[in-house]
Image (tube, rainbow, N blue to C red; front, side, top):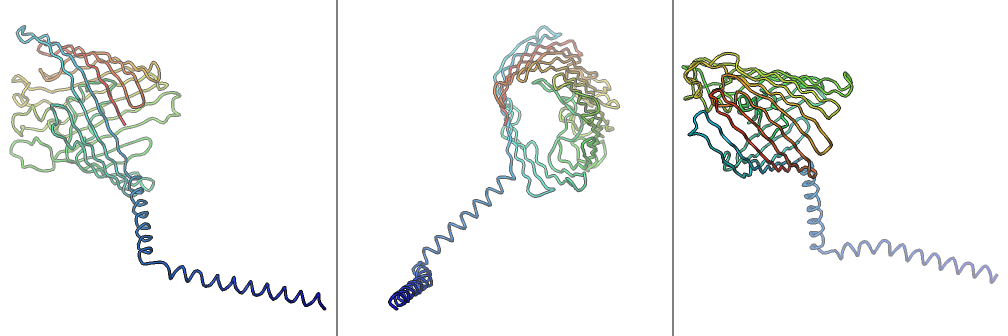
Length: 376
């Protein structure tokens, strides 16, 4: 009897304790909620909103990529003119190039690109060198549309050298244009339209300049250790190129002169690189239309040959021979040179270049250039 009564008393105590704990479990959350002030609720909401803003900012930053280039150059040029009184030499140290690129992948199939450029004595103040919107099919269909301020797909201009090749000097063309194209692992074929700066006599100012390009890249498994890219491009009016536009007296010529470019780039074992390119007019400009023609009808053309060798991962050397025809005193008729480039650190390189050029008027020039470049 005594044992059973003690057992009942123990059970009663356990039940009472359980009831108390259950009551506290129901009451305490309510008390905590009642004790929470409006200020506490507002602070928590603000913190949550701030966290959401940071998450949104992080998502935006993931869609934006920045790139840049800084080039500092020291140069010396010696001119041996056909006229002894015009002989001379000079040297200079310049901040040759500053570029800042901004690329934004807003959503799938849509991207934007802006490139700001500053070149000492050339683009002061800052210039919007490129600004484009690109729509592409990606994995759905290999088509794309690119529109805005851009370098139209005429010429390739690949080079190991600090100085631009003569093909670029003659043919580079920057315009506000619209380009449509088809691209996959093997081919990139494009066609574009723009309103050029030079029109035909008696014609109104319209979107009537055209450019077309086709580039083929050989698959890696076709020839062991060999990478090969080749292409051809055409422009309806070579006078729209950046250099020839400045050489036209006025904004008109009698007839447009189209231009063509062909190139091949071959790389063997990622060490030996051969570059060959031709760019020129397909017909002659009328006598007197080009400032450098000396009263003759000229058909300007250029070519560039380069051979480069990577001695090590850090050191590359290259030689070139380039030239042209019907270039007057605008560009060298023959030019050859050497260059050596050394990668000091990641994204940082030091290059030294020598060029000897000969012009059609028998002028000669020797150019020595050193460049320190930083790219990110």
